[in-house]
Each structure stands twice: as C-alpha cells, then as structure tokens.
Length: 324
Image 1 (cartoon, rainbow, N blue to C red):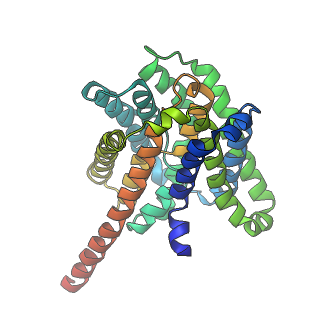
Image 2 (cartoon, rainbow, N blue to C red):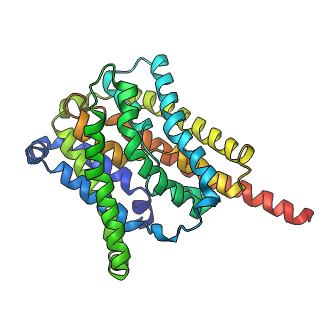
Image 3 (spheres, helix red, strand yellow):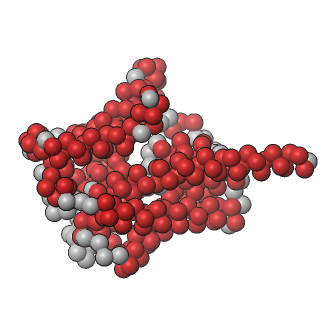
C-alpha cells in the first residue's frame, strides 16, 4: 500500500485538490486572495534546485549534439505539433490555451529521469538533458507562447521572462548553491525536498480551481479523453522523432537515445502551473485541465512502456551474448 501511494502521489494530490475545490471552494478563494501562489512557486523550485546535483556533469562535449537535437524536439517540434493539432480539433479556448502552454514547456523535472532509467536509458544523459533544457525553457517559453497564442491572447514576453527568472530560475539556482554549501544538511532533509513540492503543487491547484468550482464540475469524461488522446499522440511522435534522430543522425548509443526520447518528449507540470497561475488563470481558469491531463497521460503511458522496453532490451542483450 505504501509503495502504491508513493508511486501515485502526484495523481492522488491532484485528485484531492480537485475534490476540495469542488466540495470546499470557500477557503481556497479566501487563501488565493492573499496572493500566496507566487511564494508557493518559489518554494517548489527552491526544492527542485536542492534535489539535483549538477556538479557531476563535467564532460559536456560528449552531449553537445544530443542537447541541440533535444532542444529542437522540445522547443520546435512540440509547439509545431501543438499548433497543428489546433487546426484539427474543436476545443474550447481554455483547452486550446492549456494544450499550447504544456507543449511549450521543458522536460519533467524528476519523472523523466526515473522512467528513462527504468527503460534502460542512460541516467546521466537523462539528468543532463533535464537540467539543460529546463534552463533553456525559461528563455524560450515567453516567446513561444507569444508566437502560438499572441493572436488571441496578449502575452508580454519580456514581463513573463522576468517572472520566470524570479519565480523559477533564481530559486532553483539558490537551491543548487545551498546544496553545494551544505550537502549533508540537504541529504538529511531529502524526504522534505522530494515530497514538499508535490504537496505545494496540490495547494496551488486547489487555490486556483476553487474560484471556478462550478465550471470544474461541468467537465465531462469525454472532454478528458479528447485531451488525453492528442496529448499521447504528440508525446509519442516527439519520442519517436527524438529516438530516431539520436540513433540515425547522431549515432548515439541505444541507452543514450532512449534517455533522450523519454526526457525530451515529456513536459513539466510545475512550470506550466507557474505560467498559467501568473498569466492566464483569470481569463482562462480551466486551461489548467489540459496540462494536468497531458502530464498524467505521459507519466502513465511511459511507465507502462518503460517496463516493456526494458524487457525487450534485456532479451536483445541476452540473444547477443548467446550469439557471441
């Protein structure tokens, strides 16, 4: 039971936040008026900075081409596929904005590395791609969103860039500094560093959705499915393109290409929530639904595929040893 709860903690927290927003919206509305969300975002990314040790990456030259390829997949191919989906699907303005927002994000900050490792991917490469591409995403997100939704939604790219620097990048850098300066203390608090961001994400979702409890209650299963299927299609198109390019064009080892395919096709929820809550929540209160559905779809889909891929790789390696 404990293992199940830990594995599905984020899903459970999101579910609890949504149920509370429906059942007890009053406290959430009152707390939101205290402008707590920016502070919660800062604490989340402070913990993210505490949780990853970037000092062990010394030979970046070996990953230079893969980093460039991963950047093209994450920040060019993903928004392009999202824009193409908009022409094919009759979504509400909230769902359109939420989907475009999620496809503009960088990789997931933790789960991508874990799932890549489960699939037999190179852990070091997965971690490096995650860190590097999220640093790049801080700069690309404002301008990608301005390009994708600027015709229908006003996006001040420079103001959004400043917010991301203050709310996301600076706390993460501060967390790294604290980790380097006091590694033993950070290690002693690793449980807090790991689970506090999940709890705070739930708080943000609760505060943000409480004002729109009536709209939230009107969401149908059909709407969720119609968001999940395109999310999975975009996600796995990105994964296939990344893996094929890494193997065919870059001649990357299979484990490194696997890590890149998992990481570069996934999209992070915390940054999406940070951008949505500060820029779009007032005008598009339910745009958060699409990022949540996208995130859960990719995590569960990749979790299932990772186990299958690892077994496939093990069988292939076993056959190779027998043939040798």
